[in-house]
Image (cartoon, rainbow, N blue to C red; front, side, top):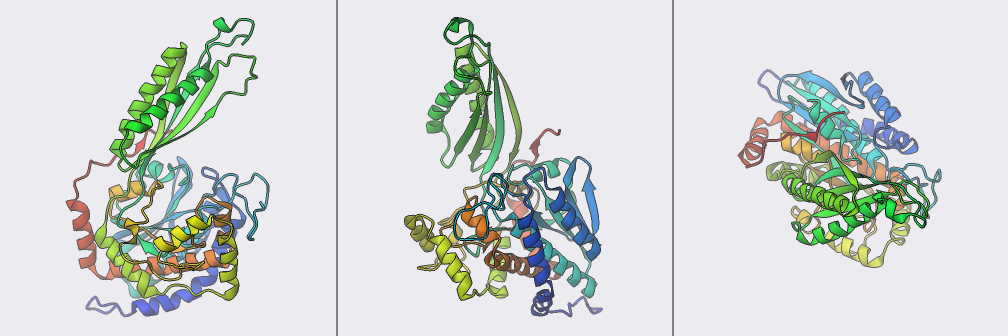
Length: 464
């Protein structure tokens, strides 16, 4: 940077330098994929990334309450820009990198949501941004956030509770998917609640009148919830699992529980559904003369809309240039694609503007998110409540393949997934380049964020 504040390195030159980091990105992708760790257990994953960033010159900041969460910081002063990274795997989704379903280890975890790629792309992008700031002497701070427990929808909520995001001005985020596209908004708000019923045991045939079945209460709660589903806001979802405690059928069970997830467009909707679910649980307890202990554990917010940030990111999705694929990669994708429902494949090809393609190799049109909305949830929504945040996706598995499947896990371990991660790293670096060098862009994004009418943010978590 010269004395007039002009940047010597062009964005194109910076992206050219990034080629030196391609092998680093691939190594991180592979290391995380080969060593999957579920939410709350990401010790090796977090430590590997900590060590890499420490050697790169970042200062590592840990949080004693969250052993697998950290941020790595470089620079000083404003702006403070965050890059969000994740690395947790999914239980039971172990899968070899091949076109047939076969676990590496039966029953073990696997990266079926591509967080090995998400973490690798975010780390690689952060390293390049750091090198750019260092070479140019640009004022400002960069933070890479190592975020655990995203699949539990709790990691960033807990990090916010412990003030780990304090001082940040804006955040960059991405996710593996079937298309290269941008989102103005996305992610449903969600919350987790557990209902523990307590009754009285008895012999189910000899003295059934003496028993008070906790399992009956769980089942009655399920019936009540089914009726509740008819009377909640559009796009709301209520999911649950149960645990009868392992009693044999001839014992009236005195313990049983139900675990519910609720999703809705806004966190206020989620909280109201939880209130009504709690009433359903109390009603079930009254009908069965049991007791119920309700524990609302945590919740994550919906993503705040950011049109100007999305515009900037979409521009960089195009400028960076999408990956090209070998015939072998296309054939691998085609054979994986053949394992999904043809109707779903055809729908997704239309939705992602990839007619008759196994891989959506271009950038999807600017407003494609409106016909392909994100109806999942993520704790990244909480970050977007605190500061402007972008969200884009990159091709990491074939069109028609969904996350949380063996097919996505297989592709996440392939060169297709690795190319998607490196492409995402370049988009992150290119977008950060614009943010650090053009304060007017930052102001436009911040002004849009500040102008929105939102409830004050508070993490839906009460600590350990």
